Length: 476
Image: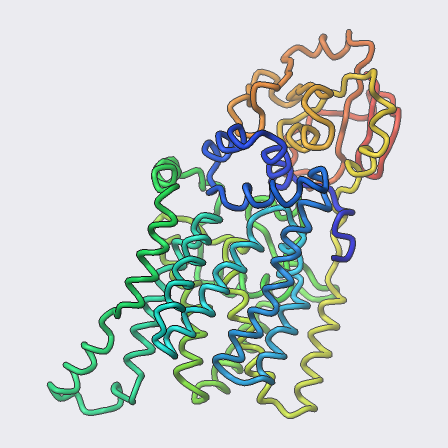
């Protein structure tokens, strides 16, 4: 909750804000032309209405599910291991910069993480009790996760893999002689039971309301911005799980890990590999069934996404992989619970020191500041210099107040973008801006220069009127 409303919305969050300010029917049209399913938008629209769709109100929705996820991590770990391990696993979850970041972002990642964690908890209860009610609840939360983000579909096969693994290791069947009787018994055990069918059919029925739109999105693709993967991408994403990535506009596209003062990224990557090897080696013989299950939901999920990416279906983006991070935290929690107190607190002290050594990035805060003074410019037309900033400005100030002039590519018409809508006012003629006596140019100084789409703007040629942190208003 710390400073949850201080940082400005970046483009993806602004899309959320613009969408939920629309009517339900208009919002649904926007979502359909985007690449995400609808559940998050419908829920956050209802939740944030009493907050007037403010930055605080929209992000609070994510924060609530991020906080509850700490408790679900505790419940899963306790169900599989013991109380002490669940304490440490939930602690690592609570202080992870990665989990905190996406609990403070107006996007669907905290919700889908919560839904998949809860689905996993009920699935584990079903495995241990064979109670059909647990399998039904598993199916409901799995279906809701797919209606929140398509990564829920990618995660779904893991439950069948875990079921087969769990049943195959029951009664030490894999360690017995491979006689025809034992093979027959093994095959009978690993066949899906009634609970598996109940869960998957339930999730499919829930998702069926959106399946036609999903097939359109699947055919359209629109994930070309995701970089091809290498095997090291798995370790790089685990590094992001533990140390986070820069927030907001700095996480646009393919996010990179946060940097640590005095330590090269590759050095931290090597140390992380050593750390993971220590954990795997020390836990190799401890509660094999439970450890195997946790490994499938963590490393197994990462390997599935890696394999799909190698086949051209690119999903290897850290925020999409948030569910896997929780199971990495569980593995670390179990490892911590088995350490002697001296080693335990030494590790925690080192981890916390590294967290405090993360180099901060200067996120945009000017839009929030300008919004408080927007009445000062009620007689002005505010010109926005690129389509991304236009969507952000549209959320903050409304479409009536702003005009788009794509300075780097004036002829480019971005009216087909989902967040633009029929309310877009734009000009391709620079003279229109110059002749407008009420014109002000809004320029956002934050962001990396190489990512800008208004590189040709030269502030020296204009007169600065007002400044709100990184957001500057110029007069032509």
